Image (cartoon, rainbow, N blue to C red; front, top):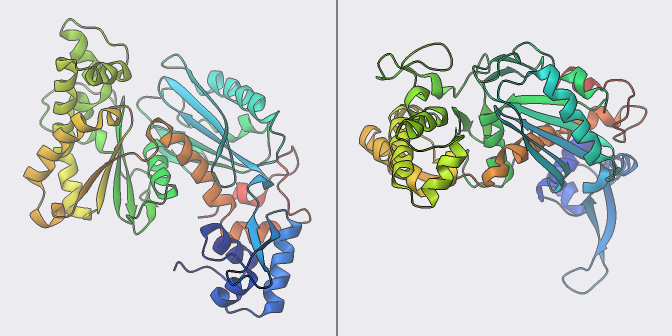
Length: 404
């Protein structure tokens, strides 16, 4: 059982995780007295985060008070921005999607041009829902600074590095904003889905290649936020130029953009790796061979990570992950040839739990993990107005210093 503090936020954590349903459950888990539990629950109820109903006792006797986390106490906004499209959605506080909007945009569009449009799309989605905004989760390709909420090194998003994203959102909400790398949000989506695995490598194989690392149930981002940047690992690819400005990177032979170039060089036409994947699923032999070879190249680098980290499973997601059987076959081929027997003995290869929605669900999980963390809940309960507001009031302290 995960540890949770014996605070109001800790009790809410037990309820959200399903470890408790009644006051008696919370007394047992927290070690608090009935009076202390009651005081904490009263604060949570005043904040609109829980409500008390009735649940018939299994014996048919007197009904026991059943506590329920209120999913409608607010919403979180999810914003997954990629090189050529942006996915937006509104989720309730248990992660159910209430509205969504996915649109392509011009490759190379800058933050100053795209973000105002993103905000207006979000505004249109939240208007009919009419619930306060509790938080906003955003993902971008490449390395990000989670505290400053800026991109710091993204070869595929020219003009985004160093641009603060929070000011764009302030015309819509004062709710806290959280930013993460796109592969890391995919890893969060796996954890949010209730995966039984605590140690995972989550690969996003799309136009570029990235990896989220999960160790003991936590996403590891590294000292500078650059953990999992496997796409720009130098391999034996000669002098092939990469989008990052270097040469010989894994992406130069295995990234989606490189596969599209190779496919078009064969006399066929694909505008995006999603087109190539669709052809592969329809049986196109050229597309299938390119995807399998990309998997082999990825597997050679992945084998080193598997030997180092000994994950229980490898999740293959992103656009290329949609052709899982073809792509995974190539990955397995190299991994089994290059990793140790012990590291691969029980290793599982899995498709992303949420498919094309993994990035959005990961962004929602990013926001929910922060705004509903015990420490964040306790801080909110100590404020004059503990309910989520989502309005243009003062910035919450959780926004200035994200929890976790």
